[in-house]
Amino acid sequence: MSHKIARVITIDGLASSGKTSISKKLSEKLGYYFLDSGILYRSVAYICLTESLEKNTNLLINNLENNLEVVADKKKHYEVNYRGSDISEHLYNEEIGIYASIVSQKSEIREYLMKLQHNCVKLPGLVANGRDMGSKVFPDADFKLFITAELAVRAERRFKQLTVAGTEASLEKITSQLAERDKNDKNRKISPLIAPTGSIEIDSSHLNVDRILDKILELYKI
Image (cartoon, rainbow, N blue to C red; front, side):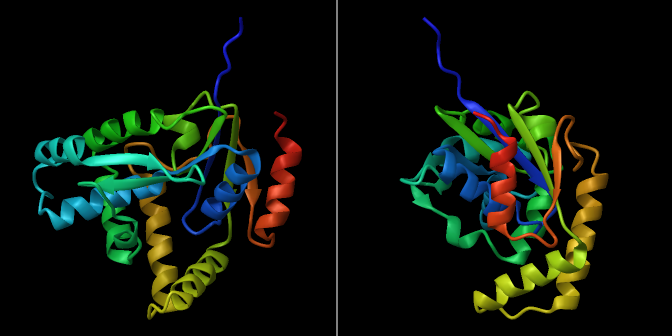
């Protein structure tokens, strides 16, 4: 009797390249689970700052092991609970984003989160998006994508996102922050941002999410 194996699709790429929107829609289309690895790092950053554990990584990991839980909602989207509460609403400001890229450089935190990410693989499959999903976390994934977009396009997208959310934003500041983040992601010593071996690269600069989705579904054969 053959055992069914959950399939894994990884979608890596630059910040604000559209990879999260693409991943969500793709997972829903295929009926797969969806994991945005960025929320894990943002959660660690948020907990680190609110609990003042920046200087004690061992204590931080011990706290995470006892209080952090990754659970799937009705749409099969993974979210993070801390001490029994959903902390999603606290994770999307720029301060948390910047600090998330700092905590992501600690090997102990990456190792801890690696186990959590592997536990998210469930039938029929998982769409995992991030910056090292196909290169480091799931190197044997069934299908790998790498999403890019021009800096100006990504900055404009992020600016619109923040403005719609009622947050005051400066396009110039967002552009320089994204450029800085690209530099940090590509040059960090642990799991730098690279196009994974065997991945298909898609430039989303001039394509909308639905066009990209159609393209991916043509390429992905179940």
